[in-house]
Image (cartoon, rainbow, N blue to C red):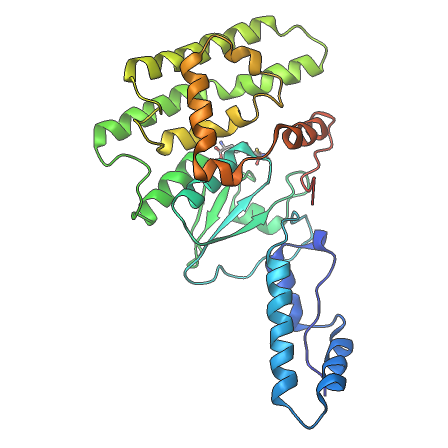
Amino acid sequence: MHYDYGVGQPLTQGPVFDQIQLFKSGGHSRFHTSAFFFYCGESSRAVPSLLIALFLQIHTVTMASTQKCAVKGSCAPEAVPKGKIRIYSMRFCPYAQRTRLVLHAKGIEHETINIHLRSKPDWYLEKNPLGAVPALETPCGHVVYESAITCEYLDELYPEKKLYPTDPFAKAQQKMLLEEYSKVIPLFYKIPMTKNEGQDVSALEAELKEKLSNLNKVLANKKTKFFGGDSVSMIDYLMWPWFERAEAWELKHCLDATPLLNNWILQMKEDPTVKALILSSDIHKAFFSSYMGGNPNYDYGL
Ligand SMILES: N[C@@H](CCC(=O)N[C@@H](CS)C(=O)NCC(=O)O)C(=O)O
């Protein structure tokens, strides 16, 4: 009697779903099968089958919960199961965090495949020619990338709990602010990178302080706790990931003169979705130093 399933290959060889696929062949199947039969006896066919199914189930869940990156040379994942959506991500990517925040806030059932961004699988480049994360994939094979676009797509595809306002002007206002904020993001990176090269960053810091003070003014003019009103909405999630990293990236002092923005940060830290996904500054620091050192450890902590 031989059941044709295996237990996969080293995790770095492919994403979860490739490995689940690998149950179909090879591996240690004989050992596990004979162990089940030894335990149950050849006479009963139903019990060992049930146990094997249970084993596969447990093993599948274990494998599915791995977050290790898919690398070049790994097999392409199977189609996205019906009723789910898949995000291609990287655990420390602030852009991907936007999409993950939206998935969580809206309670969307999803699966995650993390991509090794220095060793991208060819199949990923076929799905997203830009090669960046995040990207979403649906059961019918639609692929959507660019973080802000993925977030809006999710908001429309799952309209139950809207994160963008339904009022067209209010939505346009959030998108205009997003445009403005997109010009702030490069500074978050430029300052630590320039510092890492041993160069003076005072001018860059002054620029960031001015931009953050403009964001503070937005909150002052709106007289609301959040950027879209008195509760968290899409624009807050789109802006949050870089503020989560401010301490780890040694940028906190740039927020010294922005009390309303600091209050926003405190309020955001109380949001259940932010709380569920937040990483400590120590973890961000550890990943960031590996990134700055030229060898990002995408699987840090796993
Ligand atoms: N404009 C993109 C930027 C995404 C991005 O830069 N992601 C980074 C990781 S944080 C990435 O995938 N870098 C690898 C690459 O671009 O090749 C978005 O908003 O989604």
